[in-house]
Image (cartoon, rainbow, N blue to C red; front, side, top):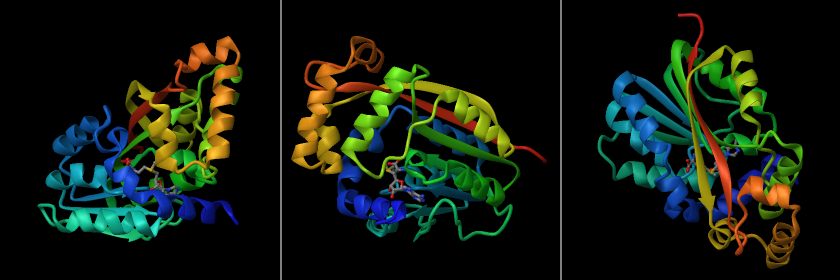
Length: 254
Ligand SMILES: C[S@@+](CC[C@H](N)C(=O)[O-])C[C@H]1O[C@@H](n2cnc3c(N)ncnc32)[C@H](O)[C@@H]1O
């Protein structure tokens, strides 16, 4: 199975769980997307890796039209059903990969992407596509979980993420994000940082992690070195904390 097939297999299987997940349906970063759309009033907006449509639904009242794309067909189905019963009726959902967006150059005023990029095979290819479809002077807003700068804690985080869900590629550090955004002419104008508690039982249930791997995860988290446990804020029941970045960027060139 290729990585792309693993992503669609994983998210097709668990799509409905992400509609209800509190972190996704109601995260602390979501108001930033709403505020940006309210102030920018874009004619054309695009949400990449839309999942069940949380960001698209938040943007829609302030946009002329919203396109929402996701690699998973089941996610697109849920996002489409929610969009159909929302007002205004200005959201169009379709299956597409971040690295191959079905939109013309410079056709979007606002592009968003939330908790998706850590699953992409090549982060840079997706950002290149986003920069291509965004008009000069347009806005890109990305939220993603980020890696600690500390190598030991980073290794433990990537390991538990992969054991939980094999479609995980990696969380990038904040400095890696800043560098790759700038490389594609997406200049961060504002960054916000959050630390969110990840409840262990909900986290593995949401991904349908097989029970043998749940046992390995518990063992790994329990026996991780104290430095890694402290940095990741690991609790007695295996719950831990993730650092999250929201970067609001302006595409150079207007
Ligand atoms: C954790 S969910 C987040 C969904 C949504 N953005 C939200 O905020 O709830 C990640 C989503 O990214 C999608 N995804 C992963 N890799 C992708 C890619 N290369 N292109 C498009 N979508 C992708 C998955 O199918 C999944 O729906």
